[in-house]
Length: 368
Ligand SMILES: NC(=O)c1ccc[n+]([C@@H]2O[C@H](COP(=O)([O-])OP(=O)(O)OC[C@H]3O[C@@H](n4cnc5c(N)ncnc54)[C@H](O)[C@@H]3O)[C@@H](O)[C@H]2O)c1
Ligand SMILES: C[C@@H](CO)CCC[C@@H](C)[C@H]1CC[C@H]2[C@@H]3[C@H](O)C=C4C[C@@H](O)CC[C@]4(C)[C@H]3CC[C@]12C
Image 1 (cartoon, rainbow, N blue to C red):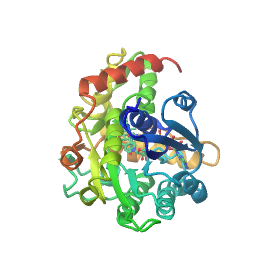
Image 2: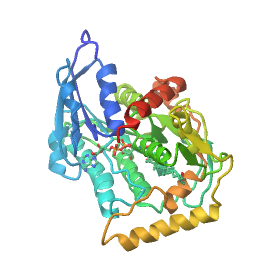
Image 3: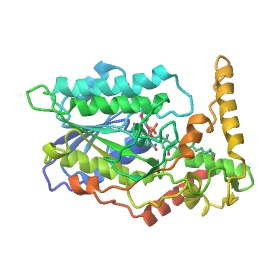
Image 4: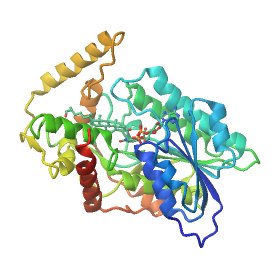
């Protein structure tokens, strides 16, 4: 818990604070922000673990609310010094309509910005995504790129499009006068694929592997590298940015930062095997066992079935043309911008991140 010897004066608001990343941000703030007086956790669905936090030295206020409702957002933001906006609809599988994705990710972000302006909150950290850059629909590789690497960002899917629009809103809001006359200071963090305790897709792959006799079958060439970052390090970056924005507003205001750490560059499937292997699963094949044209066909078939079945039921498998393109396109980041701008170093080593994730898969994996 926070060091109570320092003056506890700050009020933070974390939107989406009960999500996969949001929970880690909440825990990290409690452990690593000694100036915290109150932590407001705003989410559509409040988690039971919040109750346990209410007995600590920091006042934890749980707020059940919807970012699409401007009045709810404004009430939550009023009096906060810093807002960390992680709430979002993460959907690349077609579970939600395009309109719902835009309402939550774009209008919800606009509501957060407006609430900061109206109530006088000066510091806003936005959780963006690598997907505002790519991979693009043309499958161009982004190999060890950084924030300045030229890349043709072409979005056809509502999720990356919504994240790109929302990120632009946040960056354009930097410098706007908030209530009281001082400027708003904003920045955006762009995680690559996050992994760690609470990562639902790893759990799904684990259960799929168990059903297939402790095997998974390689579908993506091992040479396609996919950027991944440990959730604890992403949370740590959020906490550091929130802390440093005040001191370095000229340098950091309006900036974007990829989230990175020392996780190895691997294909999506080989990376997952770093955790699933020690849990008893095996990846069969050194090369893809299914020809690529067949995967393309199956992905298109899934999209067609989703569309045909929509009036009757929700059919949203992992494989669709977009997720196939993502998994099959190299997108890796190599940058030190966060280190240069605000002194970020990963808090968790790769070995630590890996063993924490393995432990989590082992303990929660069989409980389904
Ligand atoms: N998971 C990743 O690999 C990844 C990578 C890059 C960026 N991101 C971004 O990180 C953020 C968090 O993602 P996550 O993986 O933790 O997702 P998540 O779904 O686990 O968490 C999102 C949280 O937002 C909440 N939320 C959704 N709609 C809301 C609404 N209308 N009002 C209030 N709360 C709402 C959800 O209840 C949930 O608790 C998102 O903005 C996402 O775009 C995630
Ligand atoms: C072809 C399949 C057979 O094994 C594999 C499908 C894997 C996909 C389901 C995932 C491959 C890449 C993932 C995405 C990536 O890690 C980055 C993301 C950014 C973030 O903002 C949200 C999550 C995600 C879109 C993530 C989702 C799952 C993949 C598409």
